[in-house]
Image (cartoon, rainbow, N blue to C red):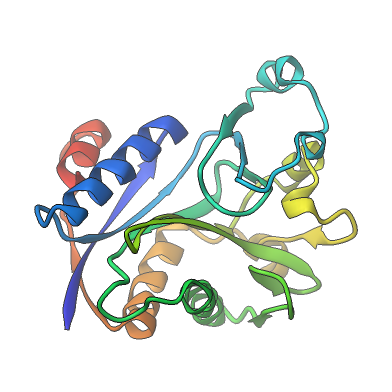
Length: 231
């Protein structure tokens, strides 16, 4: 069974996380690094994927910055989404070449890991035919957007745990004007610690992807040092 090193990094800026996962991906491609699963949350940021339409960001960047929301153009698939505190973001850096040379299967497997994780908290989640992501209680609770280079993955998924859902009113989420977004907190009626969700996700990710998950002990050093250690 292949190893995958996982780490919960807490709050990480979007640009820093992008640099971190790109460094991990370069190391994996050259045989100098292992597969990784980076789990974290971001400061408020709207990200645009390769298929994004600028009009789906409903306010000017100056207005967004005044509200403490950054805007980032990315190389992931998908359209426009929001990341922020209370949202569990996962960046798997995996080599799909040996066992998963199928992007659609990879997306479905990410969905499956999220669905199983939500089930641990008594949230019944499902897919919607023809769409990428995870839905529960009539709203989208998990978003997925990935990038592959030489079958090595970057970017990944975002799961709304206790996210401020009003921030999604700043955008047309994933280009869907008529679909609501939701969160675990809304569905279960209580706050769910982000770290608890991260801990629940790791074994489900392992089961779906057939990996031996090895935890990186990043609790003791400051976050910046921990992030450097992951890379």
